[in-house]
Image 1 (spheres, one colour):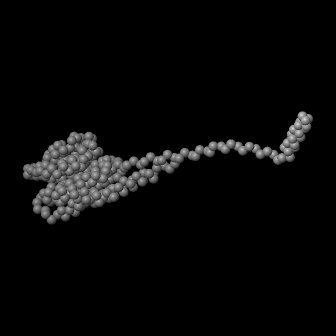
Image 2: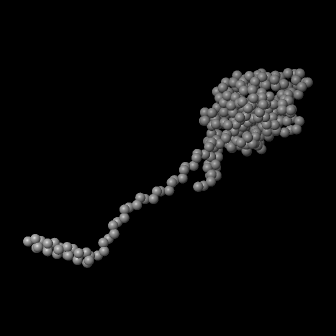
Image 3: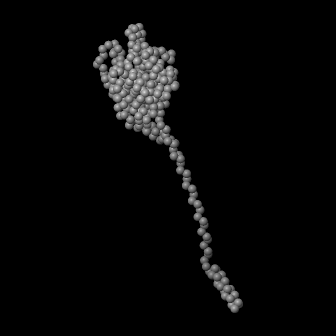
Length: 320
């Protein structure tokens, strides 16, 4: 019995070995799947383009300058930052007041308190014996009282006033030193105010050579320039005395001065101040409102100029 069982096992083993010889080759075991190669790292997103340096350029025009306040109010409401203020004549006065506090409400409050007698110290003896109807001392005192910082370097917004060297007919940019004499010199309308001795020069109103100093803002690094022109429409049929003659001649000069310069602005704002005389302080509200209206109309152009500058900067970046 035992022999029979062993014989059966032997026969089964021999049969299995015979099957291995006749069967085909054994397929190799499938390799373990390898981990997928890591995807290439995505390039980091480009850093956001910074905002442009925006300059506000305020032109000359005496009492018409109340329109500048309306423009400033809208820029503030629309959160358009002003990084630099450059002003000529009344533009330097309004510009210095704004650069002092950077608050359009405070500026407007100060302006509505302002009267002609606060700025003009007319004296007959000045006209006969001096070099102008007014010495400009009241204007100087007003600036000292209302601008809290004594020097331009201390103002909250970088600021420059533009005057004219009376001896040589050249433009003088005042961007440092005491605020009051800078504004006084920039606003010294020839024949109305006496020239101002400042910086070793004899200075008069900057509007004589540059009534809307856009290129000064560019030279100081402005990348978007918003300029406010209040010199349009010089018509005046109410010329009655020597003072009117001087003012009208100055008005014409300022307007002609602006004509070939204003094209340099990215955005030109032109409030409707027709019919407002250079010494007409009775139309303050109308001038402020005209500035508001003109600035609101200009806002799409302001935003477009900012976005165009940013797009240009983005396009100039080196490609990865």
